[in-house]
Length: 215
View 1 (spheres, helix red, strand yellow):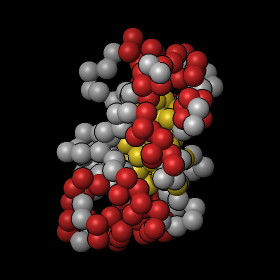
View 2 (spheres, rainbow, N blue to C red):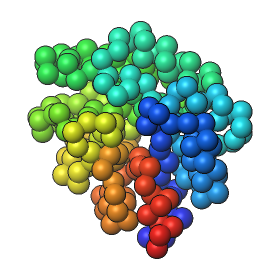
View 3 (cartoon, rainbow, N blue to C red):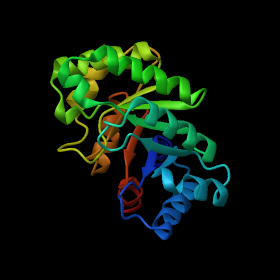
View 4 (cartoon, rainbow, N blue to C red):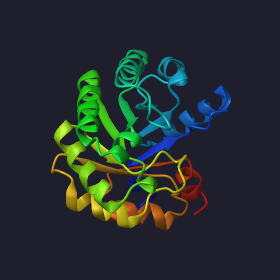
């Protein structure tokens, strides 16, 4: 797998809460130069990046990283981010609802955010490190029925990130129109190739450029 092939699947990510404008700009310049799939940045930087780097595919996060914002807030966040120039929205589900067994509420919320996003890409972060396999399988169904474009493993702020086992579980349980994104804990070139070979369409990581340019 060539560097260019790998980079075309990377959401080049910087979501650290102390990220500066200088760091965000450096991320975007790398993304433009190396043709990554997108940059994934905090919502507060979306307008700046859209104005400074026209044509750059911008992904941002909502309900992030804990997911317990109300549905109305998540929908507003999504619409505001799109108005500011985001093309892709990565939302975090309400894990409390999952633990309560309120999967209908989770599915309804995803559908509401889907509606708020219109034709823009919606990725749903289920934060696998906190879930049982049974919960993960149920959420594959929720994401599929609600019409999201992707299921995503992790925020990168939980206790663990993506694993091959979770991607394999997703692939057996998602609908044919749902793609997969691995995020969190992707630390080596071997990790990148492993997740792409397992069927991930996107990988969210801050490390890909460094890893590939070291080779």
